[in-house]
Image 1 (cartoon, one colour):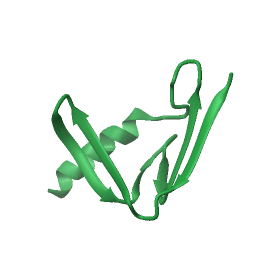
Image 2: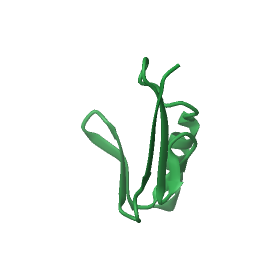
Image 3: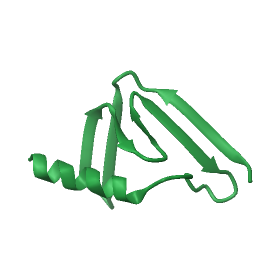
Image 4: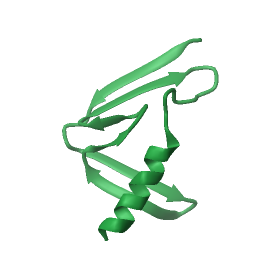
Length: 74
């Protein structure tokens, strides 16, 4: 398996947006949200299977918890 690895530091300037068609359901400016297989804090760390385009070790439950946590904070 060939893997593309992307490691980046955002320096507190990360914008995270989740949309459903044209409706934005989550948006946050600042740190990288804690998502397994994506990153946390200032760092984005992606491992992508080149053949399938799949982010490895990605956990969609972390994404769902972002949306739930944001709803609770409103």
